[in-house]
Length: 186
Image (cartoon, rainbow, N blue to C red; front, side, top):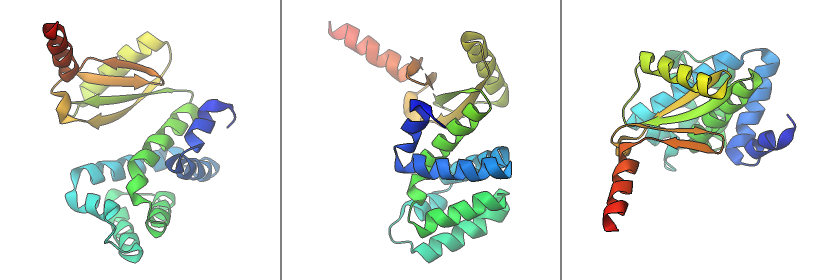
């Protein structure tokens, strides 16, 4: 993995878990299916209050958490590697780290494919057409393939925040309103 970027990922707890999973997926040639499964799990956590409580509550025992994630593996269409990994996270009481682990894994997977990853936050979920258009615009701007890691933050009100490495493009309405309010204060 070499280089400081890989080292940056491995510096955090979530990064170490993601790196270990990535190595297993790379060796098994299942990077794409693991990445897709992790994305479905992340979406389930965001959309289901029960699933979110399961992953974050200290009141849920390790055994209950492991059983629940194993039960969710089928309906979520997870491959065995991803299902086993979730069981390990449950046993180690690390399910709360899932969003950061997914981000780190997706970054490792996109680098492996020679892509650049853009973290895109929008006020509302983007349509498939909007995602395709966004990828085309980012590809034209950067001159290489771009994968997008989408998340939703209603507090943005509208627009997008795009992070590519240390570069941030903020076209959110919240930022525009804050800038306007600042300018009006004089």
